[in-house]
Length: 323
Image (cartoon, rainbow, N blue to C red; front, side, top):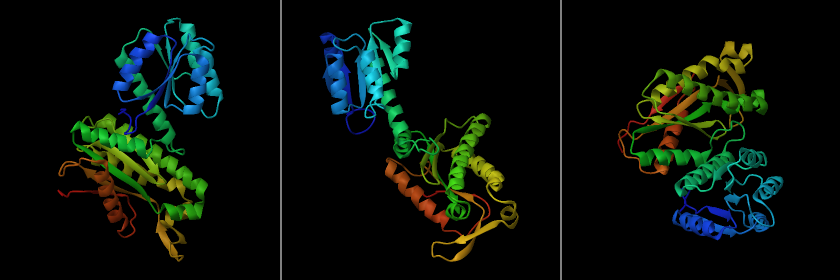
């Protein structure tokens, strides 16, 4: 199967050289991809529009319609505008490459090329496109598919890692009082706060790996890092959040330390200023072999920490269980 997910990715290969078609086709089949073949530009355009491949490999020199023209027409069509395009050409002229990129090609590979390099470029384009499609539209952070892929990658590495589920407390009450536009601004600011904390932490702590930040949706985020670094990173996060949250409230609300709004039962209640609840799960004490385990553990931690009494400061809870 393909390397990006469990479903085989479909690749359209457009090349008028039978030998190239044969070699590349055989190689990509072995890699687990499904192949659609086209021997000229018009056929490539037609099949891309009708069969919707995950990626298009376009030779520049083809009969009836060259690859550059095909590329341009695909980018003009709303149904194929986001389909990744990898140009294949024997031309080494810089002007041809620049023209192809300006017309919308995502990458370029000059013949003759190594098959392993071709696969690497295909995988990179597929991964980038998938992450773009599933990125959160508000924060542009990777969404759930990319989060699962990252966790699976960490599991397969055999290294110790931690996953932190980050949730904003009293966010609904804030939305009710200040409105959804302000709520969206808070979400974006929280995203920026998390990213800033990562940059500061990585600068100051050598043991930290390259952390991963994802946005599940709403006011829920995911942080992933080495197990011996994740708590320190989360401490950096809550310190920055609590220090600067007052900017999103009126002066009177900051002074009194709460806002008034209806709770889920419709009763007027006092809600403290927003804080973060962070639940951390690691594979230090228990074996984690599947993404679903992480999802279950972090869900349990979220319920636990959210079930506590209202608090004035952000808090972190780490799962210490061995079962």
